[in-house]
Image (cartoon, rainbow, N blue to C red):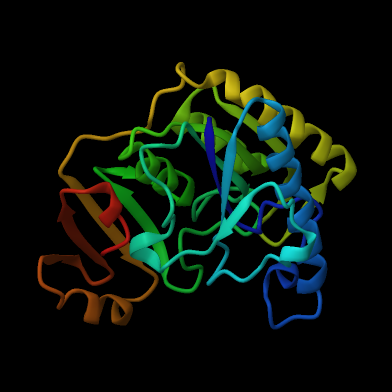
Length: 260
């Protein structure tokens, strides 16, 4: 059995301040160490559950968040090739997807560092009329290959969002957001035990969990924070302007989710 893991940082155990996920800040080094702990726990649980191969995508920001010497040597590692190929090694040979360290979509009450793609410009994002965040994007991308979501870890709001999109999968809540900027965290040693156990259990969902799919073609709608942010995007071929801040595009492939 093959498992694909995609990682973010906002929903990692012990991360409770934005400075820990920004590489230009001194606190980022601590964030890297905490990231390694959660991801290694998920890898270990996957192998204990019967996985024969685990591929991990270092997907926070532009990648290069892992310190490879700290990572489990039994897994293989990659980073995205950009927005149009953010899980480059994923294909239909995989049996399940883990999202480790995730956050809720933009506009989620008490979602720690909630955002969708860009916290500086993206205000709302919809797929076929449904507000969708990065978890939904990951699920749709994997679903296009027939790969189901099996495990999500992150703050409480992210786990609630995961159940809303994917049903009865395994989730591990590692913190509770207090507003957007702060979180009350469970101790990382405790959460890593929970992540490892949930990862192991999640492999029993293979053959039961359904890949996340929506009706094609997909209508993508993006609302920006300001109208000038929509100006240049609205000029792209195939893009329709809805109003001052909102543009829309229709695509026939879930792997074009970020082409808007």
